[in-house]
Length: 290
Image (tube, rainbow, N blue to C red):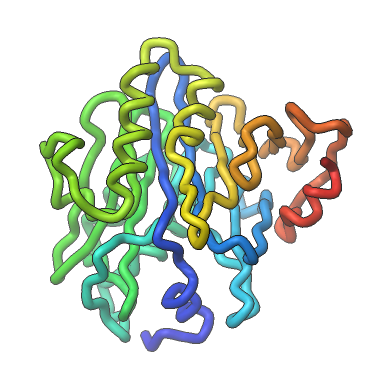
Protein backbone atom coordinates (compact mmCIF):
# COMPACT_ATOMS: atom_id res chain seq x y z
CA UNK A 1 0.00 0.00 0.00
CA UNK A 2 1.47 3.33 -1.03
CA UNK A 3 1.73 5.92 1.78
CA UNK A 4 -0.99 8.51 1.33
CA UNK A 5 -0.88 12.19 2.16
CA UNK A 6 -2.97 11.43 5.23
CA UNK A 7 -0.26 9.14 6.55
CA UNK A 8 2.71 11.34 5.69
CA UNK A 9 1.71 13.72 8.52
CA UNK A 10 3.75 11.60 10.90
CA UNK A 11 6.96 12.35 9.04
CA UNK A 12 6.86 15.93 10.27
CA UNK A 13 4.52 15.82 13.21
CA UNK A 14 5.56 13.38 15.93
CA UNK A 15 7.53 15.11 18.66
CA UNK A 16 10.82 14.07 20.18
CA UNK A 17 9.13 13.81 23.52
CA UNK A 18 6.20 12.32 25.41
CA UNK A 19 6.12 9.96 28.39
CA UNK A 20 3.63 7.14 28.92
CA UNK A 21 3.13 4.71 31.78
CA UNK A 22 0.87 2.04 33.26
CA UNK A 23 0.80 1.25 36.99
CA UNK A 24 -0.96 -1.64 38.70
CA UNK A 25 -1.47 -0.93 42.40
CA UNK A 26 -4.69 -1.04 44.44
CA UNK A 27 -6.20 0.45 41.29
CA UNK A 28 -5.02 0.61 37.71
CA UNK A 29 -3.67 3.90 36.39
CA UNK A 30 -2.34 4.99 33.01
CA UNK A 31 -0.72 8.30 32.15
CA UNK A 32 0.74 10.24 29.25
CA UNK A 33 2.53 13.56 28.81
CA UNK A 34 2.17 14.87 25.27
CA UNK A 35 5.19 17.02 24.40
CA UNK A 36 4.89 19.18 21.30
CA UNK A 37 5.66 22.69 19.96
CA UNK A 38 3.65 25.43 21.72
CA UNK A 39 1.84 26.76 18.64
CA UNK A 40 0.06 23.49 17.84
CA UNK A 41 -3.58 22.91 18.75
CA UNK A 42 -4.94 19.89 20.62
CA UNK A 43 -8.40 18.48 21.08
CA UNK A 44 -10.02 15.79 23.20
CA UNK A 45 -12.90 13.67 21.96
CA UNK A 46 -15.09 10.70 22.85
CA UNK A 47 -16.16 8.75 19.77
CA UNK A 48 -18.95 6.19 19.43
CA UNK A 49 -17.81 3.05 17.65
CA UNK A 50 -19.98 0.03 16.87
CA UNK A 51 -19.92 -1.46 20.37
CA UNK A 52 -17.96 0.90 22.61
CA UNK A 53 -16.69 4.44 23.10
CA UNK A 54 -13.12 5.66 22.76
CA UNK A 55 -11.44 8.71 24.29
CA UNK A 56 -8.59 10.16 22.23
CA UNK A 57 -6.29 13.14 22.34
CA UNK A 58 -5.40 14.48 18.91
CA UNK A 59 -3.12 17.22 17.66
CA UNK A 60 -3.70 19.29 14.53
CA UNK A 61 -1.24 19.11 11.67
CA UNK A 62 -1.51 22.44 9.87
CA UNK A 63 0.35 21.15 6.80
CA UNK A 64 -1.92 18.17 6.26
CA UNK A 65 -4.98 19.92 7.76
CA UNK A 66 -5.95 16.85 9.78
CA UNK A 67 -6.26 15.82 13.43
CA UNK A 68 -3.89 13.04 14.52
CA UNK A 69 -4.64 10.73 17.49
CA UNK A 70 -1.65 9.84 19.65
CA UNK A 71 -3.08 8.54 22.93
CA UNK A 72 -6.39 7.05 24.00
CA UNK A 73 -8.40 4.62 26.08
CA UNK A 74 -11.60 2.81 25.25
CA UNK A 75 -14.44 2.22 27.69
CA UNK A 76 -13.23 -1.38 28.15
CA UNK A 77 -10.09 0.00 29.81
CA UNK A 78 -7.65 -0.70 26.95
CA UNK A 79 -5.06 2.11 26.80
CA UNK A 80 -2.47 2.97 24.17
CA UNK A 81 0.14 5.69 23.77
CA UNK A 82 1.90 6.31 20.44
CA UNK A 83 5.28 8.03 20.73
CA UNK A 84 8.35 8.86 18.73
CA UNK A 85 11.22 6.35 18.97
CA UNK A 86 14.79 7.56 18.66
CA UNK A 87 17.22 7.05 17.03
CA UNK A 88 15.49 6.79 13.71
CA UNK A 89 15.73 3.55 11.76
CA UNK A 90 15.03 3.00 8.09
CA UNK A 91 11.37 2.29 7.48
CA UNK A 92 9.52 1.40 4.31
CA UNK A 93 7.53 3.37 1.77
CA UNK A 94 5.05 0.63 0.88
CA UNK A 95 3.14 -1.80 3.05
CA UNK A 96 2.90 -5.42 1.92
CA UNK A 97 0.41 -8.10 2.87
CA UNK A 98 1.00 -9.37 6.39
CA UNK A 99 2.65 -6.13 7.51
CA UNK A 100 1.24 -3.64 10.01
CA UNK A 101 2.55 -0.17 10.70
CA UNK A 102 3.11 0.65 14.38
CA UNK A 103 0.57 3.46 14.17
CA UNK A 104 -1.99 0.99 12.79
CA UNK A 105 -1.41 -1.27 15.80
CA UNK A 106 -2.08 1.73 18.07
CA UNK A 107 -5.36 2.48 16.29
CA UNK A 108 -6.46 -1.16 16.18
CA UNK A 109 -5.77 -1.65 19.88
CA UNK A 110 -7.94 1.18 21.19
CA UNK A 111 -10.63 0.82 18.53
CA UNK A 112 -11.05 -2.96 18.42
CA UNK A 113 -9.51 -4.64 21.48
CA UNK A 114 -10.46 -5.25 25.09
CA UNK A 115 -7.28 -6.89 26.36
CA UNK A 116 -3.56 -7.06 25.70
CA UNK A 117 -4.04 -10.76 24.93
CA UNK A 118 -6.11 -9.77 21.90
CA UNK A 119 -3.40 -7.31 20.85
CA UNK A 120 -0.76 -10.02 21.18
CA UNK A 121 -2.77 -12.25 18.84
CA UNK A 122 -2.69 -9.48 16.25
CA UNK A 123 1.05 -8.96 16.70
CA UNK A 124 1.71 -12.69 16.34
CA UNK A 125 0.00 -12.70 12.95
CA UNK A 126 1.83 -9.75 11.37
CA UNK A 127 5.21 -8.19 10.81
CA UNK A 128 5.33 -4.79 12.49
CA UNK A 129 6.91 -2.06 10.39
CA UNK A 130 7.75 1.63 10.53
CA UNK A 131 7.03 4.32 8.01
CA UNK A 132 9.84 5.58 5.84
CA UNK A 133 11.86 8.26 7.68
CA UNK A 134 9.87 7.80 10.87
CA UNK A 135 10.14 5.46 13.84
CA UNK A 136 7.36 4.99 16.38
CA UNK A 137 6.67 2.68 19.28
CA UNK A 138 3.50 2.12 21.27
CA UNK A 139 2.67 1.29 24.87
CA UNK A 140 -0.50 -0.78 25.23
CA UNK A 141 -2.06 -1.74 28.58
CA UNK A 142 -5.30 -3.22 29.87
CA UNK A 143 -7.20 -3.26 33.16
CA UNK A 144 -6.30 -6.91 33.83
CA UNK A 145 -2.65 -6.27 34.70
CA UNK A 146 -1.17 -6.80 31.25
CA UNK A 147 0.95 -4.30 29.34
CA UNK A 148 3.51 -4.29 26.55
CA UNK A 149 5.64 -1.99 24.42
CA UNK A 150 5.71 -2.83 20.71
CA UNK A 151 8.67 -1.88 18.52
CA UNK A 152 9.94 -3.05 15.12
CA UNK A 153 13.20 -3.23 13.22
CA UNK A 154 14.68 -5.24 10.33
CA UNK A 155 11.65 -7.48 9.91
CA UNK A 156 11.46 -8.38 13.59
CA UNK A 157 8.80 -7.60 16.18
CA UNK A 158 10.28 -6.45 19.48
CA UNK A 159 7.71 -6.91 22.24
CA UNK A 160 8.65 -5.91 25.79
CA UNK A 161 6.13 -7.11 28.35
CA UNK A 162 5.55 -5.62 31.78
CA UNK A 163 7.89 -6.99 34.44
CA UNK A 164 6.29 -6.26 37.79
CA UNK A 165 3.61 -3.72 38.55
CA UNK A 166 4.55 -0.84 36.26
CA UNK A 167 5.95 0.03 32.85
CA UNK A 168 7.24 3.35 31.44
CA UNK A 169 7.99 4.48 27.88
CA UNK A 170 9.71 7.62 26.64
CA UNK A 171 11.66 7.74 23.34
CA UNK A 172 14.66 5.41 23.40
CA UNK A 173 14.13 1.88 22.12
CA UNK A 174 12.98 -0.09 25.17
CA UNK A 175 14.01 -3.46 23.71
CA UNK A 176 17.65 -2.34 23.62
CA UNK A 177 17.76 -1.89 27.40
CA UNK A 178 16.10 -5.01 28.82
CA UNK A 179 17.49 -5.67 32.33
CA UNK A 180 19.64 -2.52 32.11
CA UNK A 181 19.76 -0.45 35.33
CA UNK A 182 17.95 2.85 34.72
CA UNK A 183 21.06 4.88 35.55
CA UNK A 184 22.91 3.15 32.69
CA UNK A 185 20.29 3.88 30.01
CA UNK A 186 21.42 6.47 27.47
CA UNK A 187 19.03 7.79 24.85
CA UNK A 188 16.36 10.35 24.02
CA UNK A 189 14.04 10.69 27.01
CA UNK A 190 16.32 8.84 29.42
CA UNK A 191 16.04 11.50 32.15
CA UNK A 192 12.26 11.67 31.85
CA UNK A 193 12.19 7.88 32.03
CA UNK A 194 14.29 7.85 35.21
CA UNK A 195 12.22 10.56 36.87
CA UNK A 196 8.91 8.80 36.13
CA UNK A 197 10.27 5.41 37.15
CA UNK A 198 11.74 6.71 40.41
CA UNK A 199 8.50 8.46 41.34
CA UNK A 200 6.44 5.32 40.71
CA UNK A 201 8.86 3.13 42.67
CA UNK A 202 8.84 5.53 45.62
CA UNK A 203 5.04 5.83 45.72
CA UNK A 204 3.75 2.47 44.53
CA UNK A 205 2.64 1.30 47.98
CA UNK A 206 0.04 4.08 48.14
CA UNK A 207 -0.50 4.85 44.46
CA UNK A 208 -3.73 6.76 43.89
CA UNK A 209 -4.81 9.72 41.82
CA UNK A 210 -2.35 12.18 43.46
CA UNK A 211 0.51 9.82 42.65
CA UNK A 212 -0.78 9.20 39.12
CA UNK A 213 -0.71 12.96 38.61
CA UNK A 214 2.64 13.26 40.37
CA UNK A 215 4.26 10.78 37.98
CA UNK A 216 3.47 13.00 35.01
CA UNK A 217 4.49 16.09 36.92
CA UNK A 218 7.87 14.46 37.60
CA UNK A 219 8.29 13.72 33.88
CA UNK A 220 7.30 17.13 32.48
CA UNK A 221 9.39 18.21 29.50
CA UNK A 222 10.62 21.79 29.99
CA UNK A 223 12.32 21.98 26.60
CA UNK A 224 11.09 25.20 24.94
CA UNK A 225 10.56 23.48 21.59
CA UNK A 226 9.05 20.16 22.72
CA UNK A 227 7.33 21.30 25.91
CA UNK A 228 4.58 19.34 27.69
CA UNK A 229 1.36 20.54 26.08
CA UNK A 230 -1.09 18.16 27.73
CA UNK A 231 -1.03 15.57 30.51
CA UNK A 232 -3.67 12.86 30.87
CA UNK A 233 -4.34 10.45 33.72
CA UNK A 234 -6.62 7.51 32.89
CA UNK A 235 -8.81 5.65 35.40
CA UNK A 236 -10.09 2.57 33.53
CA UNK A 237 -12.37 1.47 36.37
CA UNK A 238 -14.27 4.77 36.40
CA UNK A 239 -13.86 5.22 32.64
CA UNK A 240 -12.56 8.67 33.44
CA UNK A 241 -9.71 10.87 32.19
CA UNK A 242 -8.09 13.75 34.08
CA UNK A 243 -6.53 16.44 31.88
CA UNK A 244 -3.85 19.04 32.60
CA UNK A 245 -2.89 21.75 30.10
CA UNK A 246 0.59 23.23 29.59
CA UNK A 247 2.05 21.58 32.69
CA UNK A 248 -0.17 23.56 35.07
CA UNK A 249 -1.09 20.79 37.51
CA UNK A 250 -3.05 23.19 39.72
CA UNK A 251 -5.88 23.21 37.17
CA UNK A 252 -7.48 19.95 36.12
CA UNK A 253 -10.36 19.02 33.83
CA UNK A 254 -12.19 15.69 33.85
CA UNK A 255 -13.74 13.62 31.05
CA UNK A 256 -16.37 10.94 31.61
CA UNK A 257 -16.25 8.43 28.76
CA UNK A 258 -19.61 6.96 29.79
CA UNK A 259 -21.37 10.34 29.79
CA UNK A 260 -19.32 11.87 26.96
CA UNK A 261 -18.84 15.01 29.02
CA UNK A 262 -15.91 17.23 29.96
CA UNK A 263 -16.03 19.29 33.15
CA UNK A 264 -13.92 21.48 35.38
CA UNK A 265 -12.55 19.22 38.11
CA UNK A 266 -10.10 21.18 40.27
CA UNK A 267 -8.44 24.60 40.49
CA UNK A 268 -10.58 26.44 37.93
CA UNK A 269 -12.64 29.48 38.86
CA UNK A 270 -15.72 28.50 36.87
CA UNK A 271 -17.66 25.27 37.28
CA UNK A 272 -18.63 24.18 33.80
CA UNK A 273 -19.36 21.08 31.79
CA UNK A 274 -20.05 20.31 28.16
CA UNK A 275 -21.02 17.36 26.01
CA UNK A 276 -18.23 16.16 23.71
CA UNK A 277 -18.37 13.74 20.80
CA UNK A 278 -16.11 12.84 17.92
CA UNK A 279 -15.47 16.45 16.90
CA UNK A 280 -14.12 17.05 20.40
CA UNK A 281 -13.22 20.14 22.39
CA UNK A 282 -9.99 22.03 21.75
CA UNK A 283 -7.52 23.36 24.28
CA UNK A 284 -8.31 26.85 22.96
CA UNK A 285 -11.96 26.33 23.91
CA UNK A 286 -11.04 24.91 27.31
CA UNK A 287 -8.92 27.95 28.12
CA UNK A 288 -12.05 30.11 27.98
CA UNK A 289 -13.26 28.19 31.07
CA UNK A 290 -10.31 29.32 33.15
